[in-house]
Amino acid sequence: MKLKLEEKFAGQYHKNADAVYFTPGRVNLIGEHIDYNGGLVMPCAITLGTWIAIAPNADHKFRFKSLNFDAQTEVESNKIHEKNGSLWANYPIGVINEFIKDGKEITGLDFLYYGNIPIGSGLSSSASIEIATAFALNHYFNLGYDKLDLVKIAKRVENDFIGLNSGIMDQFAVAFGEQDKAIVLDCESLKYKMVDVNLGNYVLAIINTKKPRELADSKYNERVQECQTALTLLNEEIKLNNLCELTAEKFALHNHLIKDETVLNRATHVVKENDRVHLAAKALNSGALEEFGRLMYASHQSLKELYEVSGKELDTVVDFCSGYEHVIGARMTGAGFGGCAIALLKKGFEEDFAKGLTDYYVERIGYSAEIYVSEIGNGPVRL
Ligand code: ADP
Ligand code: MG
Image 1 (cartoon, rainbow, N blue to C red):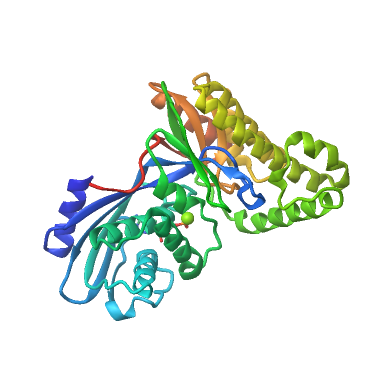
Image 2 (image 1 turned 90 degrees about the horizontal axis):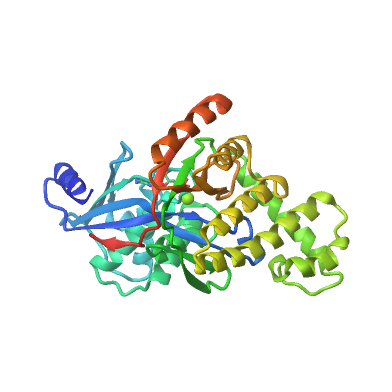
């Protein structure tokens, strides 16, 4: 890929690229919809990602081109604080803007991007292009930021420049990912632990349902509200800052306070999903991959039945997986209502799985899902 990007760079800008970098995308292995309840998430970097090639220019301009999009953009260095409509280049522009606001002198650069993460499917191509840009500039100009600084800068770009109210997990996972390791992360305190994930004879299959995540935003806000209601009710008997301070046992002692069945279901998911993250870390630490797979299925079941954020497409994928001999665990990943599912698939069965799933999915949904095979990869690197 490096060579191809260098070649394209030369074609685009009629000079050689000076440096090429890679930054991964991410999936969340388990711990879904609990980050805003003080719970733990367990993301990892994947081997799909974003490549970036850069070289300086003497024109005091920033030029942006991506092989994934037609539009190409040129911005004067002194106009970098202006958002350009809904253009993709706002992601790198936002990053450069943050560096310049912080007093760094960056001017005159040509950029070429390429990503093989399916865009807009919940594998965080946005965090990947943000961190790719931030990491590349920090390294190239020796700006002196550490990885956590870059994560916070990228999150500011997503929240304030792009205008999406997302948490910090995506940028953190993309920047801190390590090969064959998952990150157990508390998104509030940013305390984290790396856990070894030895997939052995298995690979991570990523299944893009191709269903747009239309409902995700409004339902997300509704779920945040329902969890807040549960917390207020529980606080009549116990002092809690968030739902994830409760173990399942302790929750059982107090859940009579929640009379509304829906709210009770939401809180039950949160408490048990958080327990599952701890169990999953334990399982991975002891190499019990099948136990980890069972926890993935349990997580999906809970997101479907109790938290109600799955959907026909994601359920169809997981249903197929649970009946397929060579998958030991599968679940929806991300906010839900569409986007991607993940599965632990035995090596050597990639084609058979893809064929079987495609037939099953098309028959029930009417169009094809996309299937990717990934390993757990590293964070950003210069190539
Ligand atoms: P995702 O779930 O993939 O993060 P988002 O909607 O948050 O979806 O971000 C997708 C957006 O990020 C794209 O519409 C585009 O603006 C930008 N983007 C991601 N990857 C690339 C790329 N390789 N080249 C150009 N823009 C990209
Ligand atoms: Mg995104």
